[in-house]
Amino acid sequence: MEKQKKVSRALKAAFPYTIPVFTGFTFLGISYGVLMTVSGFPAWCPILISLVVYGGSLQFAAVAMLLSAFAPVEVFAVALMVQARHLFYGITMIERYKNTGWKKFFLVFGMSDETFSINCSTDAPAGVDKGWFMLWVTLLDWGYWVGGTAVGALLGNFITFNTEGLDFAMTAMFVVIFIEQWLKDKKHWSAIIGAVASVACLVIFGAESFLIPTMLCILALLGIFRKPIEKAGYGQ
Image 1 (cartoon, rainbow, N blue to C red):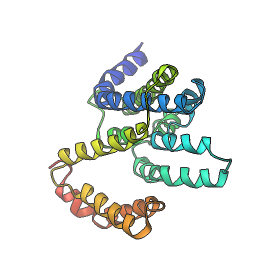
Image 2 (image 1 turned 45 degrees about the horizontal axis):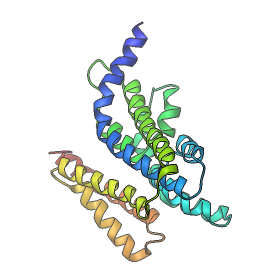
Image 3 (image 1 turned 90 degrees about the vertical axis):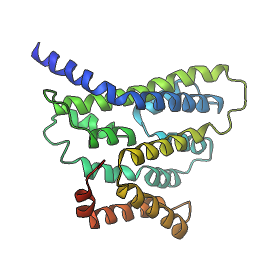
Image 4 (image 1 turned 135 degrees about the vertical axis):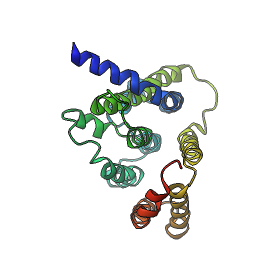
């Protein structure tokens, strides 16, 4: 009984933080589901991919790759570049995921940009178990994405209009997330570092291969300027 109360308290505490993700993931999931089905895939295919891959931008990119000739090395390279940022997310979360027991397995699998943002910057309220709080954030966000995909996959069978440009939905959400973080953090150090590093690496390495150098550059700069950023304070 006490365990059930602990779980339900964590769910009630976590849900409000995931509402913005619900609105974004539902629309993006629908867009992805529609894009897959109008591209000729059966409805179960995007749902299964969302369940086991759960890679937002990678899933949108994979639509074209699945329709192209078999090229496993190229697919691996693209997947690595698109999802490489999760390596750095993981390093950041090592300490926070300590002592979470079996929950750690799904916390690792279910980490997305939005889930990372919530679990990294939000502490569980007083009286709420940290492990269950982070697990519910992760589960809810994953469920929103899979649910949106399922709706889109079913709707895709009835779509008759031109769906060109649906894959831009993920880019639009990243822009919104950046703006939200900019408004929340009054000092903007992290955002400025990310923006400057991204533009510089884009110019130097080109659009096809700038992602990993950008992540390495951001990690190095955050490490170098860690003390001034911490001194300035997040959201101060």
